[in-house]
Length: 192
Ligand code: ACO
Image (tube, rainbow, N blue to C red; front, top):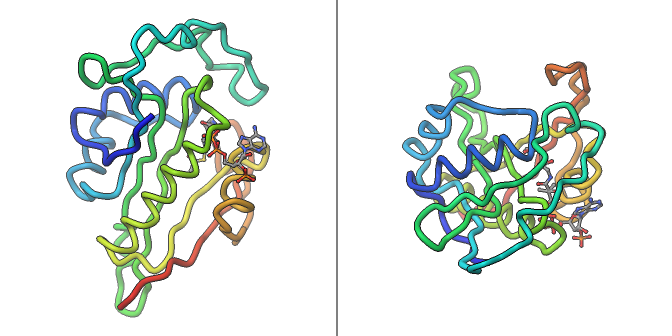
């Protein structure tokens, strides 16, 4: 599996992976907006394994995804022979209120997911570390924020324990189904 910067050619497969893995989905133009505005912030994990049978296994449904999850993951090829298995979609905060003088520049993780059969291999951690590094080095982010479902144990472990994000706040009913979110933040090392 290779981790590399995401390009415009990867966006359809990133959207496809997002639809498979998460109930929070976005219009294609929102993916375009990320890549056109912050072309160095988002990353993909891809593999060139030919004949990989693992994608045809039935998915084990978990509670918060049960309502929308498809039963099978079709491989999505970004180009012949190169299959997308994970992505992180990242941006800088462009909320006008946050851009006022004196406000720290901050990055934001819009979405992260890894296809089921490629989980627990360290891919999400690698994708996140690449995005955090790029947000700090290229876009001068002083900190990075994200939201995560309170029930999402895997993602919480990754953010809080592995990547040392802190929980800033609980946002009540942040998600459309009424679940609360943890608003998380990590201060980045930047050399001015
Ligand atoms: N339960 C407990 N801990 C877990 C789990 C799990 N199910 N999965 C991963 N972890 C831990 C790993 O053990 C590792 O911990 P360590 O550093 O102590 O060894 C750490 O999390 C990172 O593991 P990775 O292998 O890098 O994570 P993976 O590639 O499996 O991806 C992810 C984790 C992205 C959460 C994956 O499970 C997934 O795609 N889930 C569905 C989509 C999702 O929930 N995305 C995040 C939504 S929040 C957002 O997008 C901002």
